[in-house]
Length: 238
Image (tube, rainbow, N blue to C red; front, side, top):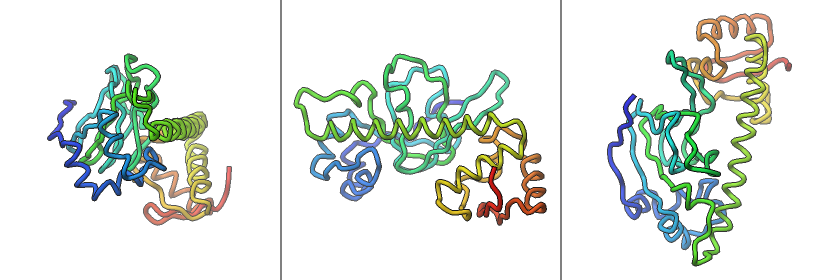
């Protein structure tokens, strides 16, 4: 599909929209960065924002990534497509999350995944070549930023390891139970709300949607779990 942006926003305008930095200061990427530092930091890192319509591709597999993105508003899917157009959904990212950071070690490498706007989105982009480097001014906030980046990259690695655990299971039921157990651990409770609908879940588990719906119904009838729409209660473990 065509990559279409519907408008660039000056960074000062973005700051005003974000109510004097409050939104960005709540994002993990800018953890412990002071409000007085943020404007300088955004300029130093060469930040700029782009808006996308639902259905746009932010970047395509095979393209070289020059920037990482912070989701100011909207939902972004990281996915892989084969030559036949079949999609594998790796992860879903929403407000305050980042993407593209995995390619930070060498921005000249072609990305092996695509990033897709699942809703209308506003993305704050930071050039990769500036992200992990301190400027000549040796600004104090750079160290905080690099520490935050390292933490986020570690978290993304864990997410992808969880995904690998799921797809390594041989049966649909094992995949479902593995995913639901992961969600229960994240929420700290056997009751939890899934962050995706049935279609997205089927894509994430790499299974047919009808087969997923049928198996969930069977598992509910057998007393393995209970659910109402996206609210689940896990009654067993793998």
